Length: 78
Image (cartoon, rainbow, N blue to C red; front, side, top):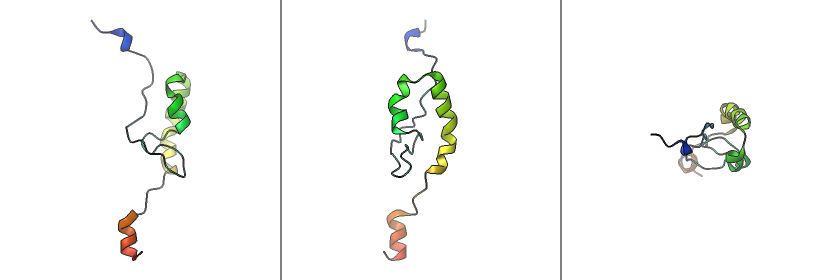
């Protein structure tokens, strides 16, 4: 017998447990949601979650990769 209490028909969270907010884009670099979306996720309707999930792939372009950090500075002599 399966315990139906824990079975819910909800859209799973896109969280991948890499929770770092990009300083300029202000979105999580792991799941690409805003802080407000992350905080409200459990209270959102299925339609709102679906809308956000559909927008996530487009948000990847808002996050620019770092350009080498310390290693790049050392190469430039700075």
